[in-house]
Length: 158
Image 1 (cartoon, rainbow, N blue to C red):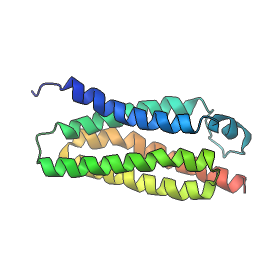
Image 2 (image 1 turned 45 degrees about the vertical axis):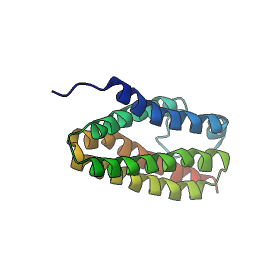
Image 3 (image 1 turned 135 degrees about the horizontal axis):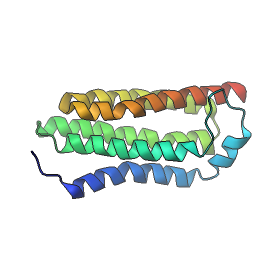
């Protein structure tokens, strides 16, 4: 059994948490805005979002760690992790488009790109370490749900 690289694990969990934290910091007024817009059915209370996102960031960090430490071709692992980091940039931008810019349709289109990016990362991770792909599935589902919510906000508030 391979030894746990604690430093790498902490760094790879900290990266998505930092991305999400910075994005949340930049969209701090978003919770107030979210309370005021018309929302579709099944919309959770605003407090659910930071809890779910924090869990998802931790899990995706673990998934990236499993790929990083997998006994697999270095070049393939780095391509997969590069795709993962690109997806984090897409993830970072969505709340800014939605909450700060309040361009709900553009945010919805951006969220579709995010879903495709998460799907691509999931497939790429799965080729290297199956468990990493499985760990990404809740994130993929959550982004789809976020797409439903984003679309609903756009339709109900135009």
